[in-house]
Amino acid sequence: MKPKVYLETTIPSYLAASPSRDLVVAAHQQITREWWDDRGRFSLFIFQVVLQEVDSGDEEAAARRLKLVEGIPMLQLTDEVRELARDLLSLKVLPAQAAVDALHVAVAVVNGMDYLVTWNCTHIANAAVRNRIERVCRSKGYEPPVICTPEELLEG
Image 1 (cartoon, helix red, strand yellow):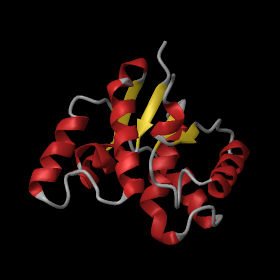
Image 2: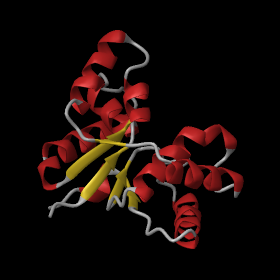
Image 3: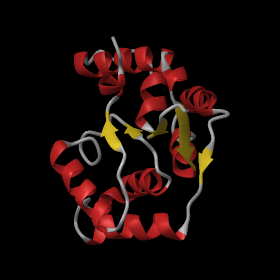
Image 4: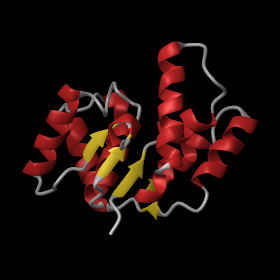
């Protein structure tokens, strides 16, 4: 059975974006493309929020992002997901302005994903935040996914 991966919005965004002049962002884009080319090792999943986010902004870029996520199975918003997202916010694991990020984390956790892959290193793939996310999830009876960047999932 392939590991289950939740794709947070930054992944299709980096894949569909024009090459960046910022060296760090350009490197992230290249790493994301390398990981994407090897994605067949994983079962990928998204959530309605990802569709909403990739469909916003520039029409041409949105069309490229939507094409990338086309056909990827969609996870559902449930009461459990809402409750865990509320807990992540009310317990100050994530700030109020990161409510959408709390939903990304909660849907991945509740649906038993093995990995949550993202370039959001402010509110999600951040060592200090990740530790707090894991603690809250376990206290609620969930085993959290490994929260990581595409770079951490590259093999070889």
